[in-house]
Length: 181
Image (cartoon, rainbow, N blue to C red):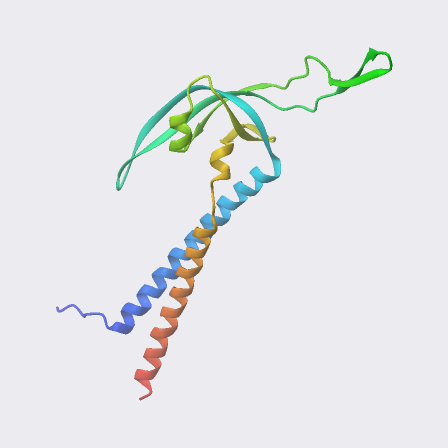
């Protein structure tokens, strides 16, 4: 039994379908990722945290291994601070936060710390983090969050999807021309 060699039309159609399939998966993954980003932007709280431990793990994947940098940080939950008016005498008054008003303390691991932040930060250093008000143990390094841009990925996905549609259209066009000489 001899194998049939695919024609140019079949290869173009297959390539187009694969491109559309991959772009649809990427779109779904992007929507899920964007939902987490939206939640972080809506309810994220920026506080100062102290790095209590830093480590990296080598994670194996199909292409070898990659390094995952991790910080353990400790921080206080931000609370709404009540202000009190203090009379300094001679008609001078000043508003100061009430003493002893601090939130709960949390400790959490933050993974995927950028190499730049990881190498420049030592244990005991203070860094800015963003945590979710609804889940204070979910936190990110503020500097790493600010460096993320998703536009490049969106442009790539849109281009891949458009190329897939174009390839499918071209293959159908070639098939219709071949059947109607």
